Figure 1 (tube, helix red, strand yellow):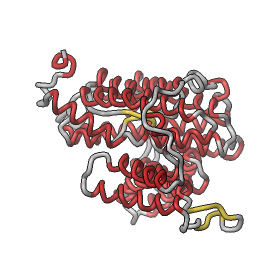
Figure 2: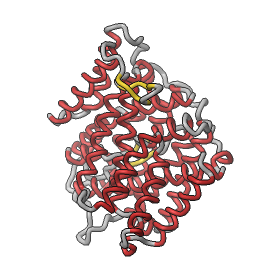
Figure 3: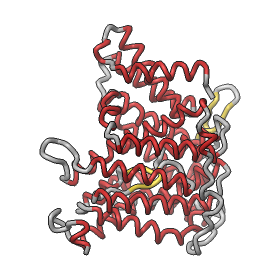
Figure 4: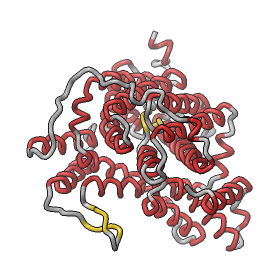
Length: 431
């Protein structure tokens, strides 16, 4: 049955290899079970329900990817998008988390539509690669700021906005040691480095009496507080249009980049450089995002951590289905998730930020007409506490600078239209 469903022999793999690859991928991304509830709970969402929604969304998304596209790529609520959901849409703009889930749902519907109509390539090709890299780096800087805040290393200041926190306290010290541990373990290629870092900081915090211990195993909490609680009508307000498109753009770019990167490492690319079954993969991803919004979590997306499983030999959807099964089993670890304090997940956020900001190394910094809008895009996200604002500033700056520099040939109608819409949004409909 497995041979017929996943074509193991044709892909040069075995059942044992696929199972081990799935376990490897799960260990590298299981940190989302603890990070996502910690972030979304700041909106007022029930932490236990978000934990269940996170596990179910990851399980459903990974299973869909494995069964529909037969790719060894796992899915879960995306980093960066969960931060934008909490700190941008809810805490900064003042919308309810129900409206935020409505925006996630609408963006997933648009994602599914463009996947079915096969206009994904047109949209991606209309956005310069440098601008896409800048968006990813900006999200990384945004995560880094949030991580430093959660760790207590950076605190607010009435004059300078930010200043150094009290580094003699346990949270910043443990967070710094946790980050050091994650980096060292990752450098030594230890599977599950991020997860081990989170658990090590939590164990130290419990041992020092800094945080209470709620246990390890128990029946899953109720999903009722978040299940089907999205407010789609509220998300249709004009002020939330840019939010919906921010979720869409980031998910689209992130997915396409992840799919191509992992598929290339797995040797799944066609001779002409195309990715077979890209349409199926994107449909699976958009369907997972729809399901995640209904369950009660931010945008579900493909995880670059899937490359770890590919490195372990994973070549088919059985790897992704193994990850799905492990996420279902993790539902019984809700007490452990409740025991993990924000400063224990801060090292994970900072580590993910390092990976995302590294994309800036691929840019040509000698071209000022490219470097300037890239820097504006990346800095606007943490400094305005909004991914949507960063995307808007980036599109506007790129178009204006290229036009004024006499490089009209580097622009296209879609880019100019989007830049114009962002000008209107920021000038007249800024939430």
